[in-house]
Image (cartoon, rainbow, N blue to C red):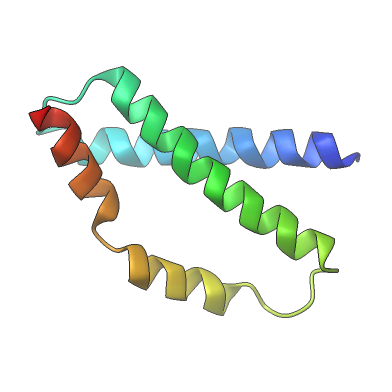
Length: 88
């Protein structure tokens, strides 16, 4: 598979997963679908970029600790962004 195909696949999978998660989190908020889609593209792009970087570095090391650390660091930011979107 080419670099472009891998990037497109990761981006599509990530966007779908993030969009489902964000829709669930936004269910009690008054967010627009456009805001949810924008935020899901943002998170999917960040995730895709990190995965492509790991692949380009030869897939050395286990990515799980990095992912867990990022999840800890970013905990609550998606909900906060959705709350901010629903207020303005």
